[in-house]
Amino acid sequence: MSVASTDRRRYLRVWLIVTLALVALMVVIGGATRLTGSGLSITEWKPVAGALPPIGEAAWGEEFAKYRASPQYKLLNEGMSLGEFQFIYWWEWGHRQLGRLIGFVFAGGLLFAAVTRRVSLREGLTLFVMGLLLGTQGAIGWIMVASGLQPGMTAVAPVKLTLHLGFALLFFATLVAFLTYLGQFGRDERPLRPGLRAGSYGLLGLTFFQILLGGLVAGSKAGFTFNTWPLMDGGFAPPASTLFAVTPWWENFVDNVALVQLNHRLVAYALLAATVAYVWAMARSGAPRRAIRRSMWLATLMVAQALLGIVTLVMVVPLHLGLAHQFGAVVVFAFGVAHAALVWRTSEAKEGAPDPRLAQPAR
Image (cartoon, rainbow, N blue to C red; front, side, top):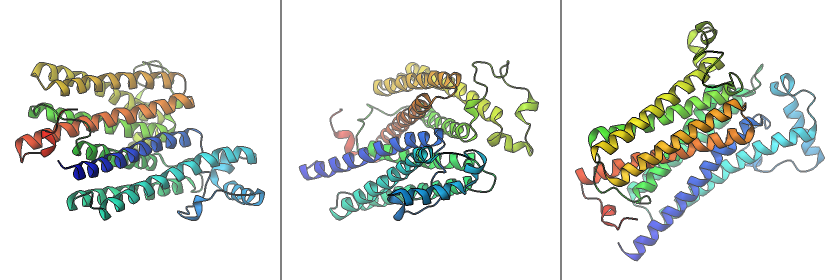
């Protein structure tokens, strides 16, 4: 690989790693915005003009008046002082500015890469589609906020919050996968067996599903109820009359705090069991050493995340623990994506056309 080619790849790695770090921070800041009840403090969507915060007493008074007209203020925060409003306003404003920064960094970096021919046509098209995914994520964010401004609402709709989180994770996953494609995370000595490859993809899918269930827990505030473990309401699960108290029955899966929290617990147990079984199968199969080590690290992160979730629940979701649990989910997901992407790239390179990245020295 030539020096010029190496420099081009180095640029792509640095650019995408910076974007990846900003997205991870965005997920955590989004969690803080939710936990502080700040997400509905800005009642308008102004992609350009909204970048400037209120300046001066009159501007703050006007912004506060808009919030006082919202259902959340009337039903939940009536009597809030200007200082209290400014606290939640700055959280939401910072969340939106970080979103703008991510868009600018990604779009600007892609434009520079295209103009200076640091990407091939195929890579450029892939990155452009990733940009569309990022733009869709921003649009869903406003749809989510708008759902919380409807009459009678004091928070955003849980399903839309989960959708917002899901698209953020999908974009995050594409960044990790592209960095894997660039050879950022090394390589395996040889491909895994088909069953183990399927296991890595299955674990990633189950991890993604569990994080979405966590989004429903966050959106419905289910973490503030049933704050005991391992029991819920004195038993393994509340009675069916509690779990399916809402009609129609299917709404219980997104709006009933008892069933929402129970589902999050059950999938956590299943995910832990599946991860342990996967590590055991990897070790018994004689898989590549690097792949086995990654699976063990993934299991360690899963256990740590589960323990953190239990502590967060029992402590009734204090801000610092809630944010730590959300960041832990991002770390586990990133590791799972990187592992699955490495497994896929190695198998593709060995079973299909030669991959020049595999000729590079192991890192």
